[in-house]
Image (tube, rainbow, N blue to C red; front, side, top):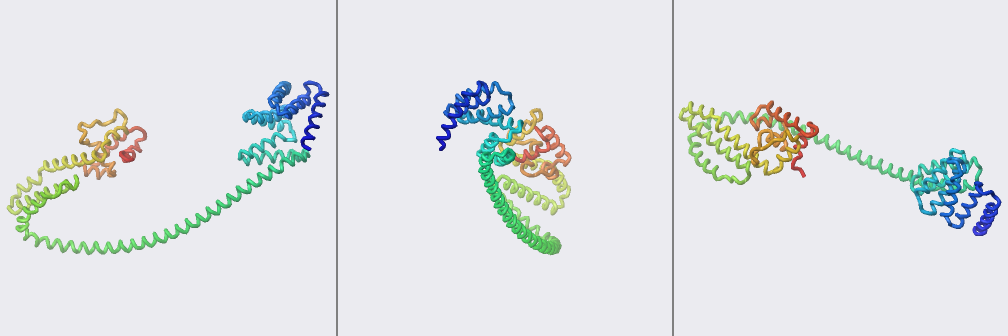
Length: 392
């Protein structure tokens, strides 16, 4: 029956084409539909171009031409022109209050195929309303299946949303239960910590009493100084055989123990011999302190540069070219870089840095402020960037 109706339709189109005057819109419509029926879409597009020259853009006839051009471009595979023609047809139908919205129905179908369900739903509802006003049962029969598909999509989305909501509520319930358990556990631990703190306070009181007893024993130890003098020589020999390769700073601590022991012996000897003037001279000398400080800094610089060999270059990269610091010796650090080397190691308190470098807190603060003033970018982030030097 389809073939029979197609042949009958073609015959009537041919009769209409013969009777209609050339240039009439129905004459051009018959020609284009006959070309589309022959699958000759390029010929149909040529007829459409000829028809389009005599039509005012935006008119109802323009909407009809654009609708046919949509089918021509669709058959030729030109998706851009296809969508443009369909969009022009939709706009012209709306502007001319056309109730038989064929182009809008096509647009809704394309949007549905591309997954744009919301826009497809809005368009098909508009088309359905127009078709209902127009009274086109055929158009309504086209619209109903698309509305059914959209309803199925919305139903599936709603089911997914409900399922996701149930999962979310279950997860929140489990997390709430875990949080409650964690709070109970933390509360118990805090109570245990309070009890432990009370025990520690009691232990500290007992320790103070013990210290008082030890102070009384110190008087008794003074009688043993003569025996300790003999043992000091043996301890000095034992100190010399300590393993200086345990680590650089462990070796340094061992050296300091030896030196403190030597001072203690000298002090003990001078106290026993009542050489108080020499004892005062010994404790007044600052040469020893300066030497030890320099040795400490040298060991610190060497160990730090072994840990962070590119620290100086990376540090200067954070400064403006005119504010960068030049090192006189690649194996040592100067005071500004040494301050930020301590910051890199996690020592950010200016008072602690001042104690280590034997400077005042104000001096350390001024060094830090002057360096940060020459930073590239935000000066408040400078020290955070320094702390990240050498990190992978």
